[in-house]
Amino acid sequence: MPLTLAYKTAQQESKYADAYVELDRVLAEMESYKPIVNGYPHWQKSFYADYIYALAKRKHYTDILTTLQGISIPLDLWPTYTRHAIADAYLATNQPERAEQVYLSLFNEKNYADYDVYSALYYAYLEQEKFEEANNLIDEMEHQLRRYQYSQVKGVDRTTHEDWEQYLSLKGLNLAYRNELEKAEQYFENLVSIAPRNIGYQNNLALIQRWRQKPLTAKQGLEQWNGLDEVSQMTEINQMNNAQALGNISYWRELNKKLLQSAADDTGVQLSYKELKDRDRWSVEHHSYFSRNKSNDDRLLNSLRGSNEQSFWTRLNSPWFNDYYRIFLEHQYRKARYKNKKLEDARVGLGLEWSSNRKTANILLSERKDQERLGVRLDWSHWLNDHWAYNFSVDSDADIPLQAIDQKHKGQSYVAAMNWQANESRKAGIQYQAIDIDDGNLRQAYQAYFSQQFFQSPQHTSTATLTGYYGRNKAVQVDYFNPVSSHSIELNLQHDWLTWREYERDFKQHFELTLGTFKQKDFAHQPVYNFLYRHDWRISRVCYLNYGVGWGSHPYDGEHEDKTYAILGFEGRF
Image (cartoon, rainbow, N blue to C red; front, side, top):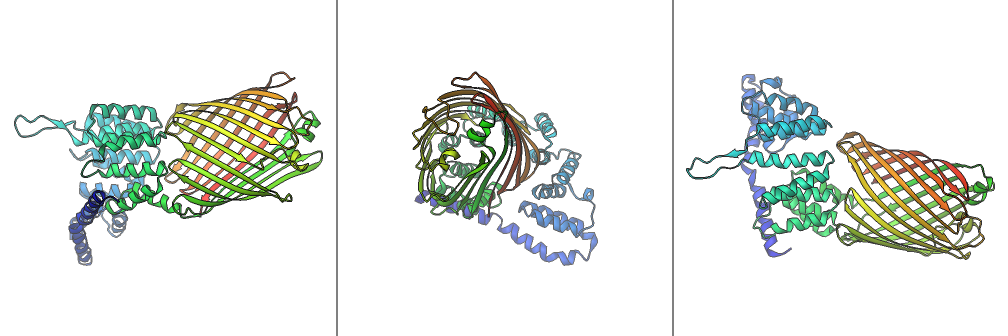
């Protein structure tokens, strides 16, 4: 760490350590008086009113609620500042319904409700998914909060009131919480152009840019403040989160360690620390697929595509070591029925992953069951900036049709792709894949897509994706589906509905419809369709589960294959 930065860090840590020394002494002294006060009921109200208020200043919210349990004083008899502290305690301990009622009572007190009360009530609404009430409160704040403050000194101009500055930030964040990220970014860009020296506005702009999947842009916007003698805490937290998003793990760890000393009670710093500790744990990912296929043409099921398909993929990841490396185990299994015969393929591998600064590399050594042959797969991906990324992959023992594997054939695959994104809502990409099979076949595929979100609300998001495909294969006699050429165009519509949320847990319903047309050489254009319905559960901060069912139809050699399928997936750390 540079000497200047080390000096600034030491200063800030010292300030944080000294800030509450006197208050902590007073709280300890009041704690010793509690047995005496409890013996005199007429002293309790005045004593505990101040004691609860002091606990709130130290953010000891659990202690506040524990204290209240031992006191039989109705809520409405507490002084206003004590009720405010009690409401803050309810909100901080995930009881927004109770917090809402207490905050609302504060509005009955003349001239008491300031920005802090309004914003706390706003977040109580938000935690209950009361987006309409929260939005209405933003409108009310615009008319109720003071915009300017005036000096008693003659000739001194008025200045913007602190409450109004904070309100302007909350107004922009409200757009983001409602999933209107484009409007939120434009809003803060406008504020920054009007008040370029306002660090708060710049930090909120950086926050929105990161949420829009532009962490490098966010980082560059904050670098202008690096020369200040004392960087604001909000800026440091943003820098820490940018480092995490950009994959700069060592700098993320350094900033988090520093902020745990200077801002240990900040929930964002606490969450960042948990996510750093997550990297020291094992993790697992799994996906399963089951289908039952039907067709009027038995040849299609028995020879080309198969029926009763199953596939499983599981990856077990070790904890990260040296910040940028981890080992993983991978297992893959495929099975389908052909001509009353079950064909299967099992593959297990050991790999090493390296990831740093938005670059990722994998090497996997794998072996297929009963074939005693070693395969090597190399993967590389790299974000060049916030908008462009590329990746490529080489596999010496590629996944090829099961019929080819049953005949002891082997294939090599090569994949190259380029992806572009404007932000989280607009993306596009192209990909080329070649699979060279030792039965004389060379399978080539070209694909391009464009994706655009077209509807956003607090609990709903809709996306449309247009995909074009062109494939070409060698004209060789094989048992699997192998058209000389084919092409398709498909429109995919997706809708996600956040049906339920409770802090680190939530439940989403996912709807997906695909409509398109497929053309194979020597056959006419035919329709393609698919529908998927899926449940996505976030069971905890580090545990996810999804499952779904789908129906689809696709033509092969002029005949349609109708498919009913189910999927299952989970991810977790332990």
